[in-house]
Length: 434
Ligand code: KE4
Image (cartoon, rainbow, N blue to C red; front, side):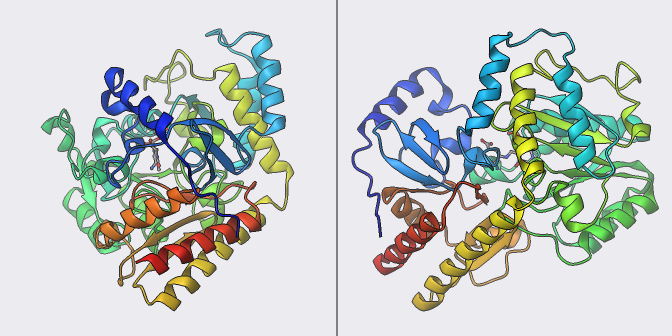
């Protein structure tokens, strides 16, 4: 086994000290600060394929892929070539470009039940815009979301959100007004009766249900059998729109994302991450009847200076084209993820450590608990102390995992079976050490 035991991390530590002087917490997104696992974050210098390299020159096998976008691997030659060519022609105009139509056409071809798409600059923007559109289209105000699901940091979502907010144990963020919070109703993931109760109590007031069709912000949690179908039927019965937040699952689980993979059509779908191929892109799409309500065609306002930016559109178009042109990529990605899950389970069974591994497609999470992890409450039962030791042991041996038990792994196509075997071997060493 090639152990990439990490040498010094001195330069990362120095960079973190400098960053903290001028950036809150030294990071531009909280989960990067390692607060839930402790220790000091590494600073990345470069990346290529399946590997990231920190400021001290240490190499890591990367299992977060920038939290999803780098599905075809880091610094892909074809994407870089397209980006370089685009950049030579200018980087931003605030005027329409043909590339926006090209990627919109490609996405509407790939995404089931989406006639039109509007590009924005983040998953948060996509989700907040989708909720405003649903409220404008239905004339209703209330929103149902699920405990543990994360849809970005817009006010309507920071009501017991997953991901960073849960990791910090502050489910309701200060700054979110009571007025906002009253319009967001919380349901339990994979609990259809609970959702039906909420609908009954708020029957004609609910504009939309927003959900991660495969949750990735409380670890990876697939929908229970019949759950999404039940949501679809409840939305039909009560005249509410079903919003699939596919920021994580879009173009990852299949070309057509969770809608294709799980065979359920939402009314509005949001995208991020993979759709930008590593540049800042979010998007939301729906059938024309709904999208025609958006300004400038309709009254629901939404805008953005850098929306449809040429570089971001090029990066997304190039990435999506590679995915579309490679008929084998999803079976490769899924096969690698299943292989890793199987080998980790074998190590855990041999050691006799209680665990659950949730996996769907190229999303995976390991939970140190002896109950099935099916919602936020069961995800919170994990042994976080053990998770911290696991995270740091793997990091010290050149394996970069999500620095929180409430996150999913995102495998990328550049990972080799040797990388996966090295990961399992390091994992075995970790289990021996406890
Ligand atoms: P952004 O605004 O971070 O681009 O997207 C928000 C978002 C929306 N919906 C889902 C399902 C998401 O997972 C996200 C963001 N995901 C987190 C990872 N759990 C981003 C990492 C971070 O916050 O730094």
